[in-house]
Image (cartoon, rainbow, N blue to C red; front, top):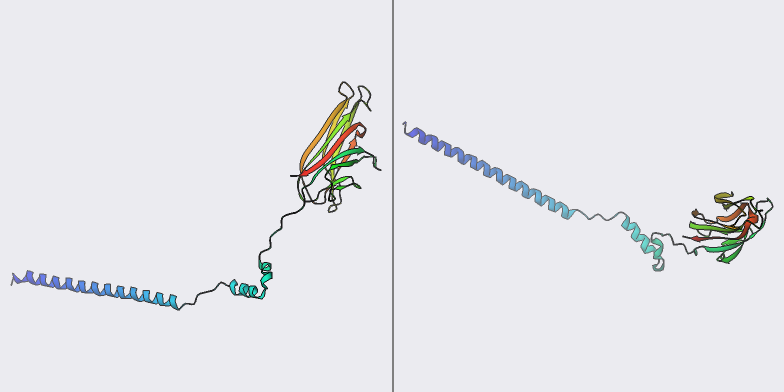
Amino acid sequence: MPSEKPLLILISHCREMKQQEARLRIITLLLLLSCAALFVFTNCTDLTRAPMAPVSSPAYSAQQNLCPAGDQSTTSTPTTAPSTASPLRIALSSIVESNLTGRPYMNWTVEFGGDNGTYNSDSRAIVIPVTGHYFVYMRFLLHLCETVENGDLKNFRVKLQKWNEGYQQIVDLTEARDSGKCLEESSRTVFMGQLFDLLKGDHLKVLIYEGYELIHKSSFGAFWT
């Protein structure tokens, strides 16, 4: 009997190992069956599901069918057309005249440019045709000894102004000043040039605030950048 006890224990242990192995096989089989069922269910659902069309495509297709073949361009997105206005390039020379207020605005003669209404002779102004950036310049040649006695100081002051129907107000853009005496140098040159952001319809004109009698020659111009 004592020699049979270990043998019985070994047999019992082998039986338990086989039972555990059988349980593991059953569990593995169940897992495989579950995975296979899930795979089949997923594929069947994808096959039976109807494809979803874009929401806007039926309406867009109907609109395309209603439009004639020659008018299909009306369904496209509108784009902003580029400006066809010619760039402004104008040069003026001057004749000094006084206005009724006693402050003379320069009266100009067109050297080149000035077509398509870019110069208004009534207001003596350059008219901006297209909104954009413009370089505006003024140049004055002053003769001091023709009007100023030797040693006397004479002042010169000029303003660039703009006016537009939209705001109905004269606005000072910039100004230049100079002074001199009739000594050895009888002439002086005053130049002013600046880049401005201007609107369509702006009128640019030159106001001689002081010393208009000193002007011998002058020029005024603008060009689109």
